[in-house]
Image (cartoon, rainbow, N blue to C red; front, top):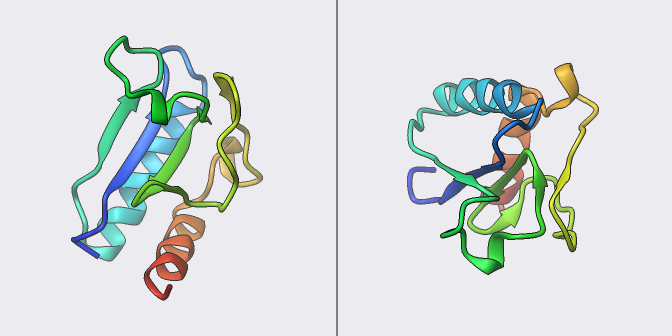
Length: 101
């Protein structure tokens, strides 16, 4: 698990960013990983390849953790989990699924 690249994509003012960050950090602690990169989708230096994802989005090795495709513009993303974000258990399940591929 430590060789995967995990990115949390958000933008300033996203009302779900804090809850997504908390669930991601809880999931990573559970699987023994403490490293992820948080990217501001509105920052001038953000690569074009990351623009178009909704906030919050979790990428594992460049792929959306839920399997959804990238959109065409900046937007909010609401999930069916607690507080409108993926739960830590859902994130762990998605990690396990990605690792088995």
